[in-house]
Image 1 (cartoon, rainbow over the protein chains, first blue to last red):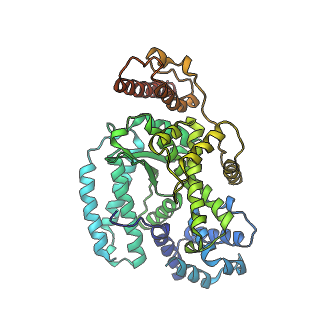
Image 2 (tube, helix red, strand yellow):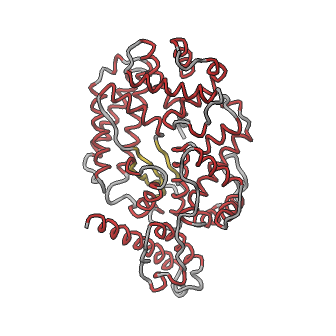
Image 3 (cartoon, rainbow over the protein chains, first blue to last red):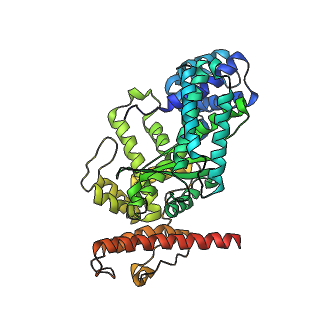
Length: 96
Length: 357
């Protein structure tokens, strides 16, 4: 095979990078921010043991599990109603 | 990557579209998908891609790859190429697990005899891509493709084609993330290089077990009979359990014996609000089969439709003693394949007729 198969990170990360950069620069659509926030909330619930991995939303499965693998300790400290721009910047770094 | 990458992809796609324009598909969903891919291609071509950011270039590179792959599979799924009978059976199985109206099963015929696999854009990728193209171009792709690769030479060999039920199992697993969730639940969330080889092997094996059990729900042990032909003594490998382990697990499942592998998968399925793995075929007794008088089987329902593959295997395995015994091997092979194909197509035509009348 000429090339290695692309990983999920390679195929999916560009879309999340676009969304996160839009949020950081303030030119996102309300729907895209809502989806990202909902996925972050789910990741926080799982990190805090308040939700079970089996009931996670499959539409954001890669995003959520990437956060859990790379950022779990930090997620435990995040309050769900107050994300703050630093959080989006940190998450963007993971996907970059 | 810079804008020249996008430019080259666009030029290559232009060639590809010019060759596909005269394709005739077996259903409207494929026509729609082709048109949507072309609209998306045209929109990107007209876009300001020379001034894209790096992330925009990366996402568009993925989108153009997506269009390329879609076209490749559509080209191999035209009216006179697609193995319609098996695809229809797979669509019925798919419907038990996801809403099949959102999907199109497409095929690509390979020149290599062992090439049975599936690939698909996953749900998350598809949703994210639609958000991106919706925001940027006000476009949407309606259907997701389930892309199945099978050997050209075996595309109408109904004994080996049972492998596609196993491949569909892999698709369903990835769609519902069942074995992946079990893996995280067992071994925790870590950076990928921190998992041990044994942990990753366990994950690979659980994916194969899921696909084997998925197939067995519909076609009894037909998929394992084929494994026994092509990989009789295959030992454990990093990617696959040994053939003996796979065959034993399926046999135990079919015989109603409790196995932790099945319990683990069903527990995960239930917790995710999904269907469980269970027997979904209806047994047709070989001695009562219409094949005995050399006519297609009158199939009563979808559960019997799936079982037709196992019935074919039973006739093949006993062809030294059953009604086929006086035929030469080549004739036996053709008779069995023709009877299975006609049985499926008769049932599908009857079903479609009943739907419209």
